[in-house]
Length: 250
Image (cartoon, rainbow, N blue to C red):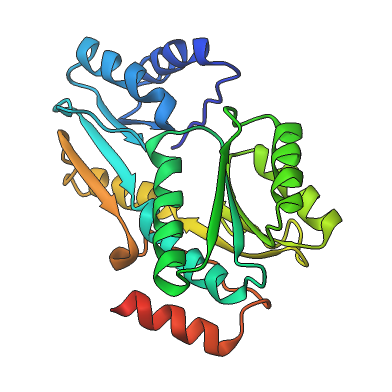
């Protein structure tokens, strides 16, 4: 049995966890970096309760908490390879929600691939300091487009929708994040840097059921175990897909 508890605001975090404990949940999974501290506090107050935190980590992981992390650098690298082959202006953009590890990793991998494949490429970067401000995403993207960007990679939650709108209006390309995003704007979004959170959650629950859940550790998901990847769309030629896959395999 699964219960989903949605927080309307950050002040809900602690009470939501208390509700899950009251419901006698075997495992409580916090989704997102912002829940890291609340999970840590709850783990101290309830040492016999099992917790997991997605996109959160600690200097010393509590013995009843498992950190579920994803190698965003590798996902960013995949879409960086694609962008480096598809740009015509050699100017690309990265729009982040906030400068936190799970966002910065996408940019690090993206930029690494761009520089490897095309030394002349220029990457413009800006953070919206929000994961909800769609209008801010549009404003940032419009400025990048005026600076000759022809592909913008965005990792900013709802900020992404503003970026997609601006790219569609100006007839340039965008790259989505976390989940397959091409369906949102099929003519605009050429690929997405995939973070298969569902895979991480499923395997963590499987460990719990099989009595193999281990607290105090990081469980890392990356290219090697299907934790991250890139979205294949009609924008990508067979040759480009083969090239990206060959780089991944190396």
